[in-house]
Amino acid sequence: MTTKDFLLEYIAHAWLDGNGDGLSSDTPLLDLNIISSAEVFDLVHSIQAEFGIVVPFQEIKPDNFRSVDVIADLIDRLEKQ
Image (cartoon, rainbow, N blue to C red; front, top):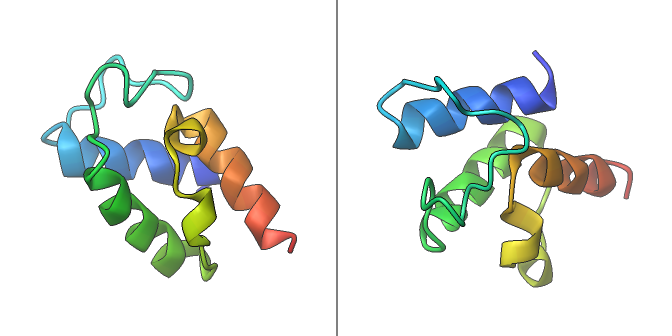
């Protein structure tokens, strides 16, 4: 499973009642209120557990959670550190 696949599946299950129809890697998650700013912390916890990385507090900002594409880029960057 790719990073993007994990994120799409997780978001669909956690916030869309398992229905990811219409959800794509470039869907604006915050703009469409698919996830709230508070729910970003739940997502961060899951990312840290799944990928074995630490998401520094300074990286937890709306720009880094706009879409699955952007979140996957963040994960990739943090995995390389």
